[in-house]
Length: 158
Ligand SMILES: [Fe+2]
Image (tube, rainbow, N blue to C red; front, side):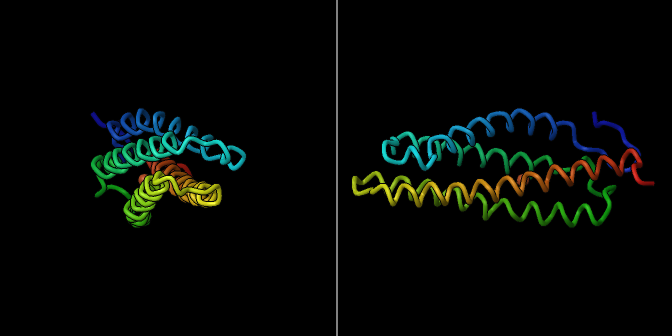
C-alpha cells in the first residue's frame, strides 16, 4: 500500500529497498575509498582492490535497477512536470555512472598482470575518487528531488 499523500506518493517499496541497498552500498563505498587511499598505495593488495571494485559494480547494478524498476514516484502521472523532468535527467545519469565503474574494474583487473606501478595505482585511485564524487552528487540530487516531491505532498510552500 502506498503512503497516501495529497498529490504524489513516494513508492514505499522503493523507499525500503533503497534503504537496505543503500546501507550495503555505503559500506562498500567506504571500504573501497579506504583501500584506495593515496597513503596506502605503496602496499595495497591489488586483488582486494579488484574484489572491492567488482562488488561495488554489482551493488551499483542492483542500486540502479531498483531505482529504475520502482521509479521515484508511486504514480508519476501525479508528479509535477518539473519533478518528472529532473527525475528523467537523474535516471539518464545511471548508464554513464555504471559504465565508469565497469571501466574502473577492468583497469584494476588489467593491472593484475604484474606490471602495475605505484603510479598506475595512484591514477586508478584518483579516478575512483572522481567517480565517487560524481556518484555522491547524483545521490544528493536524487535525495533533494524526493524531498521536494514530499514537500509538494504535504503542501510546504503552498
Ligand atoms: Fe540514481
